[in-house]
Length: 100
Image 1 (tube, rainbow, N blue to C red):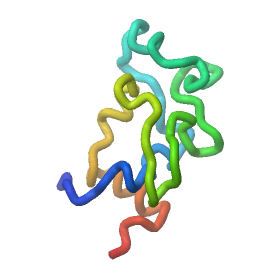
Image 2: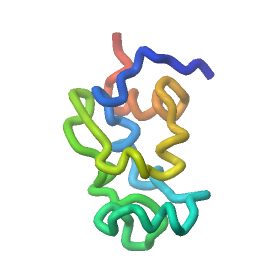
Image 3: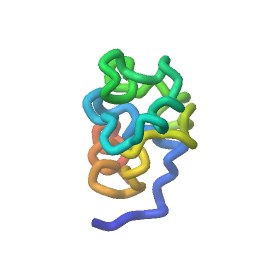
């Protein structure tokens, strides 16, 4: 796996818009999860709430300019996705953002 600093996450947001199944909670403590506003948590409390495939905490337009409304307290799955890793490239490809 080759990670890259060439990807600007704030000009992308593809990973946060790729799949409603992806932003699942895993190893977060109850205290960490309690910090997230209920408006961003799925009804089953198993992950982030999504609108279609897009995480409800993502603000902006994918591929243009985005930000995370809960960045400082984002779940582990979000922290683990790194610029240029396999998940990043799959999500970017789905939005046509890997073309030169």
